[in-house]
Image (cartoon, rainbow, N blue to C red):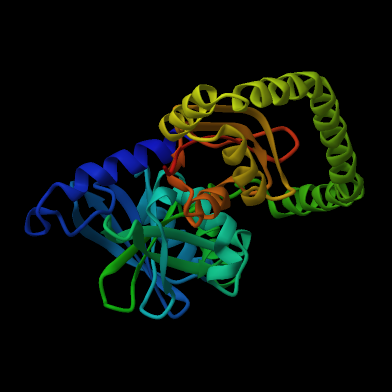
Length: 342
């Protein structure tokens, strides 16, 4: 979550720099590079953005020995896998401007809607291409490579005792795209298969538990809400009685009308929020003060709440008041602030 906030802040600073002054090569300054070409490759070293060729690589027994000799003791913080044209797919997407604060999380959740792939089936990165503050929207470019297509290259690099940490490949416009990779497992294939089998067995057990867990959590949340409603009933009745007394006189009616115009109708605001929020969203805190609303709770997809709130004419300037966190149950913990329209 801290990385998402830092990335958003860095992008804001980058937007202040004129495009002609930005450095086109945004890749790592120092790296070991393997340029892939039709089942073979070429090793290069990069230092201070300057590259030097070490030599070609053939992935047979003799070629692997020769490549290891070329590498020697060379090490770098980044191992870059450079792919030829056609490997990277790209999709243009438009999102609400408020989604930028948690952009990686939003794109990950919506990946199967934006592309034919789930988020765990691809390596991907996203770049903000344009911001339309008047319309409250941002235009993104999502670059992705299917994981299955990279496996032969990752396995080949493992023979050189290299694990790629980043992909570089030309996009549709010819400009390079950079996609960070998760650190691959460096243990032997046999141990990897054993861990994979154990993981699958664990997933099967968790799947059985997960099938019943949402129903249990929903039941508990509903019971808690009903208990809170029961506790609030006496106060609601007192408020109704007081409202009736105030409405009995013109002065009282005028006072209520004046305050309602200034501060807004709290019950109406609560009713509007109830209609907007889905059944998979549970509030644990709601503050309405002088048309300022603060919502705290948990949801199956907190990023979608911003879109839902922004689409309602009674709610304005909805945004996350704090980074979205993930609870132990898998739900998103959120804090949202918004304004109530007069």
